[in-house]
Amino acid sequence: MPRRRSKNAHQARLWVAANVSRLRRGRGLTQAALAQTLEIELRHLQLIESGDSAPGFDLLVDLAVKLEVEVGALFAPTALERAGRGRPKKAP
Image 1: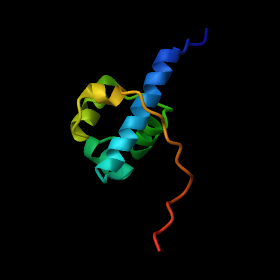
Image 2: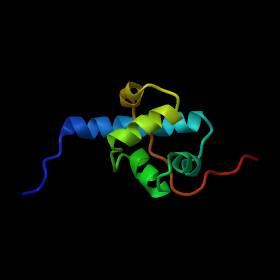
Image 3: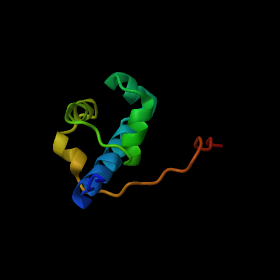
C-alpha cells in the first residue's frame, strides 16, 4: 500500500524550503557553503530548498543554529520562490 502524504506536512515542507533558501541567501551563503558547514551533501540541501525532501529533526535544529533563527522560524508561512535554471546573469 502506498504511503499516504499529508497535505499539512507537504505545506510545512514547502515553508521550510522557502525559509531556508531565503535565510541562507540573506546571510550571503551559497548552498555549497551551507552544506559544507552542516556536513551534508550539497544535493541534500538542494532537495530541501526545493521542497522535494524534508530535513530530519537533528538537521532542522542544525539549520536553525547555522541560520541564527529559532527552529519555529523555519516553519513560518511563506511562498517558495521558484529559481530559474543555471547560473544567475552577471551584473554589467
